[in-house]
Length: 419
Image 1 (cartoon, rainbow, N blue to C red):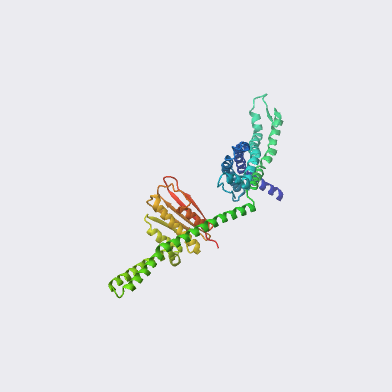
Image 2: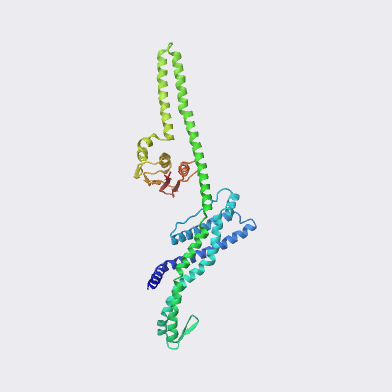
């Protein structure tokens, strides 16, 4: 009795998964047709590469098939209840470097292998996924069809002519083995999803290599940003505070020489030296503030951001959510990201309002700055947006820029807060 109950429960669970499996395999048939077109296109490009004219198109051809591959990768991961993982080496540099990436990046080989395998199998599985449930229903309905048929009429079922009630009943019972095969469609769908995962998921070594490459790139960017910051500090000190202190020394020296001969002029020089020293001290404070703002230590990130927003020429609406205290490096990066983004919006956006969201999670700090300006912001190598990206990537974070023509412009930055 227990075994019968288990069998019924298993059949019920399988039947419940059947519609999702049919839909998964049917959509797989559509992507298999697209994969077949992609394989033919890649073969054509490869044939032109043999005579040299197709080589520039090879990286672009692989780039064009990536959305299809990514779609089925996400489908398979969703069906298996997992998270889709992708890792590609970017097509950057000159033609030689891009072509080299085509052959050295294992992700490209995985994509081509999946396209070929899916084009060969996906269409057939989709046909079976649609035909088997339909065949089951037709077989179950044959006695009704036979009853409605005019006398002397017949039709074929599984290779024999249904021209009598015994054959009609036999056709009815043939629906049960067809149904048993139909109930295997969830297994076929799972196998297809697992094959997609196996073909498209990068290996641990590939993920580690991509991670090392990403960290190397962000480390180089961080070093460049650090070097540029040091040069800026040195320039500010040399052109500002150092020049003013040198002027103080000269003014005090001249005052000392004129102290006995012209006391009034000497006093004027001392007053000028005092004013110059005060200005030098203010510049030194400004330089120190650009290294690590004291307000972060004294009042925390939320208060520092509120002060920056209050001073901004464009009205700024704040939304601070459980920010709390963060590691000093994260707070400093967040502060400078926000000030740079507000400065960019003030200079270039033509906005009348800015909204700033600072959302805090224990492991992640999220910053989103949105303005209602003209949009069309473009990230350039030496621009402020590139500086924001380098600051974020130096902490293993990232930046996403959305700025369609006409606006709005949204800068979203994520800064990990783990130790």
